[in-house]
Amino acid sequence: MPSARELEMVVSSLQPLVGPRTVWLDPYGRLWHSTPDPARAGIPDRHWRAVGTFERPSVEALAAAISAVVGAPTALAC
Image 1 (cartoon, rainbow, N blue to C red):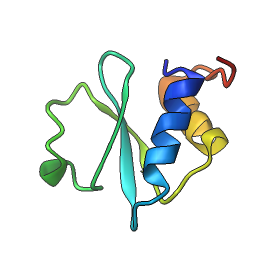
Image 2 (cartoon, one colour):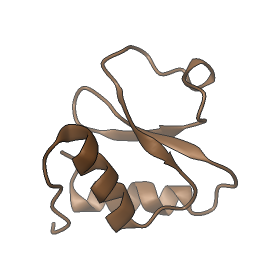
Image 3 (cartoon, rainbow, N blue to C red):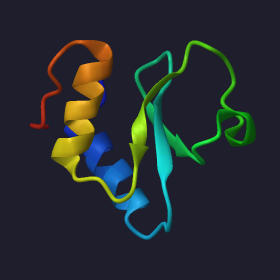
Image 4 (cartoon, rainbow, N blue to C red):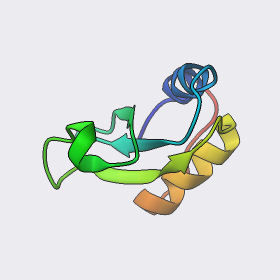
């Protein structure tokens, strides 16, 4: 599961971008974001999970989406 710090870093990196971005969880539990089209995004294999497509999400919204994908609560404390 991503740490609170990683969630904050991804949310911060999404803030200046215009348009939707898809957030992915890689097989090691790290977060990545890309264009919504996986073919254009260069997502390497089927073991990556799409968390959702967002435009400037909050940390709480991203944490809730990750929890829904992995089936476990995401801690927001460091």
